[in-house]
Length: 496
Ligand code: GBH
Image (cartoon, rainbow, N blue to C red):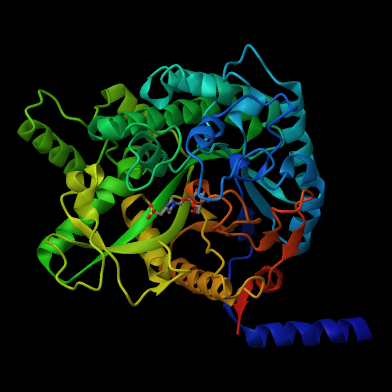
């Protein structure tokens, strides 16, 4: 045996001894961003205005953020590809800015620089052995389409269809993993209701009782349109896969039947609102949600439910619109039927329209580690529960985890041990879910870079790379988690 072989053998033994949680051989490690949050390149690039550009002009974030430069990935994607390669990820999940491709959202006006940009980005990844997973829409609707009603106009379904057909035609030979829409739940609720927080397009609070349900409905139809276009017109020759990106919140409850029922109902109004029509055996909205909305609407003196209905043909098409489920998971809450008596927890369930519609209280568990005093509490077992729910209720459809991550704590900065602890916990729970038999194919850490965190501006930093937003060059600096994640990926295992 020569020296190299001996060294290799020793290295192998060492990793075998220390690796305590191995991942499947073809498990894909990944990290994620979205167009508006990182690209910049808003001016002089041919990109059209999106709803977020307009929204921020009128509703500045506390730190007065804009998307004009952001992380400037529009210019820095080549060096970013080197960083990704260095971390060792085999996949990179990003989104495309619709208004960079189609400045007015319509296919009769294409921006060639935008089209070239995504070719260059994809090529620079593929050249380094990194597979792109593209989200077609991550909340940045072309402004011109908002001026025609946006997601409240059912025509939006056709506009989306035209956009995605262009995308599949242009990039489908290089891109094999597509997701249609990111977190329709958040986009509908925050964008078209504004509670508990407002996102673009905004301004719909007085119409909450119907606007978020219509917007969500049209997003499901748009996803279905895109999925069916891909599967019929492109998949036979391009051989890729398509799904939708759903955010899941897990809801724990006390050991009481009424709380168990309430938690199941709230999960229906959150994850299953979108998952059941697309991945459920029977399709359509969850029964509990339909019944509750019909009952509330009757009580309110309406002649029909505030929850729109699908035609039987739509139900069928929606059920055939996805190959896999793209999952974003961050946190869990606690649900109770009655006002929680324990006053150390906050009860905010009934303060919003959605909170009234679910008819339950949502609070939190003070034992789950709260990150930087914000909405984010670490509860890794919630991820395992969501994955097992998908296994049991959605026929173990393949899952790609497209987002999971934590923000910086002010004390730690680059020495981000809280983030490492958060990710390790969630990877342990994910590993348990794999042992349970869940079919999880990939894990993407959110986010690759510190970026524009919507209503919180650049203040909340989710990146494993720090970005200096005061420096026009937007330099990237690895946090401690980069080194940690690199080791996990190299070993394909969680090490002691
Ligand atoms: C994801 O949303 C998004 O896809 C991504 O763009 C984003 O950067 C990332 O999460 C990190 O937030 O005031 O209690 O409503 C996850 C859903 C929506 C959860 C905003 C936190 C604000 C807290 N997030 N929400 S609250």
